[in-house]
Image (cartoon, rainbow, N blue to C red; front, side):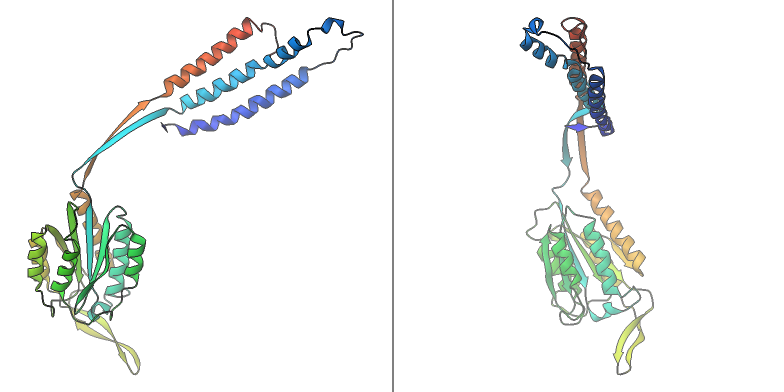
Length: 329
């Protein structure tokens, strides 16, 4: 049961006011009578019963008002069903944590910017299973597919450069991510691959991993992170941290081929805002893939309550003008 106009329940405040007014009015109309004998009051039990029953009026009015307020709030019985084109979506985020991800063309650096924006993406998709793969010179699963996003986010926050051997094994990172989806029964399987370089190591070439993803019907969105030209890179020296301008070498050709092969899309993030927009675009693209058609049917149920209120008021009127005619109500 649902109520379309819940605001009408505030009218229930009238009930205690009605009762209070009735008690005050009754007390004000009470009087006393001195008698020299009680002979004329032999039917005391009847009088007491009559005294109690004379309050029928306020009882019926209060009940009628309560039921009428419920009717005004428009009770509805809701029946709904949905016809979904998929049975859910599984997403694996594969992120590069190589040394070059410490460049500060994104703030505070590429790695932290990628983490923070990816975490916001995770929070916006509470119904999806999401996993995390990290790669550098090799790759491993930081978090398997899970619906427990609090655990996933905590593990994501723990990701740092230096957790594994340095390098950029894009093919290995993608292959590990695809492997996490091999047991998935979801209709939509997605990998978001984020890197700032080109494949320099690993036993699996990027395009081989892309072909495996295609065979397993995994869609891959690739994201190249880094400004165009040169980026400031922090270097520790005996005199503290100094910055060097290092060239940005993203292999956009390979990343584009991976995306095209798997039915995904390639994006380039040159700053924090563009990276955020990319995740938003991916979010919208995947929502379109799992569009759900919903049907709702609501039936109005106020009429029975309105009829009950009418019956109560009619009963009060009839009693007042027949059995209790002339009585104080």
